[in-house]
Length: 469
Image 1 (cartoon, rainbow, N blue to C red):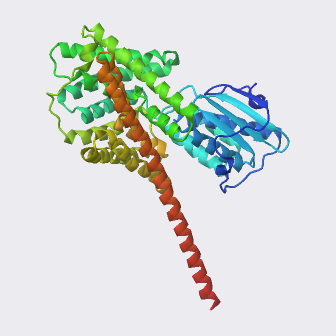
Image 2 (cartoon, rainbow, N blue to C red; image 1 turned 180 degrees about the vertical axis):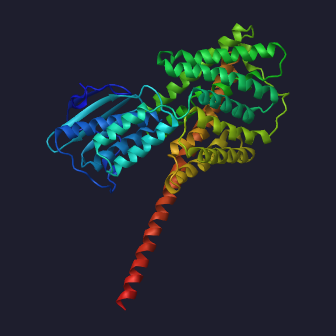
């Protein structure tokens, strides 16, 4: 039955509650034992409200694409802030299991995972709400009401702005990959068509699965129709920019991060889900090429004769960030910070690619981008790191590499398998860069915080000694 007997439907999914014994957590509960203000819950009703707030907040974190270990840790901190020190949380991408002990009995709730992702403005509000709950600044009932309001919030920008944003990000990525006039024009037209499909998909969730396949077939058919008419477009490069919002690059990277943390179930499920999305997109691309009479062998055509204009790449980064800002309805103050993180990632990737090779450049790109995103969040009161770093994941483009490799496999298995090996290496490099970059910021921040505390103590001691004299 619903937690606490509530009859209101959950915006994300259903839950089940029961009583049970202690549940083992994948992370030690002591990791959640940070010093936060603590509020004391009354009795059973408040415990039920806390359980409902925790599982809905966990669903929201998962909908943001957060790592499951971090979801578990954040939810334990929320429980600890409410005076529940004996809490167990197990999170998977598709399920959450929470057990709390209110000094009389242990109560357990089981919830399904989120049904769909969140926009960037919703992500920012979810992380702010979670931080407030960890500091005991709100009660579970207040947090639950705020979370419901966040999930029901309409986009900041209307349909036209969202469509323009999708067109802009498609053009921006085309400038980054192959900045020629014909490719840029094709990216604008195809980006608008796919943007219309995404608007249709957002209003009708029943078509969530076939929409990427239909979009890929539409893009592939249009590109090969233009190529058959002699227009100077690069079929292989032009199929990626309009489909970038369907590419599971962030999911594949997060799956590798989960595996690196030892979360085998979460990591493998994310990787398999991402791979299935790539296969569906590749099937759509092949279908479009076949309908236009190109055949699957046409998917390996390349445009080496195209002349690149490197200076347009940086304009493309700016345009891509502005498109993401409009299409995903980012928070008001997020655009400058999104641009900063994206520019850092692309700059570091370009520099290191010339030194160490393109395959490992994603490692250094994320080492540069992640500390900057956390610095913006912690020191400049900017948007959450997830909001500012997500566009950088798309620009590093492990998802597009996977799509091209799976597509090539349909016509040239040897080339496709070789490409997939490269993709695994690139995704691993990006995942390790994300881990190292995050750890680097946290380590330096803790060291600086400790040094600052010591200086403050020394200053207080000297001030006290001066007054004593």
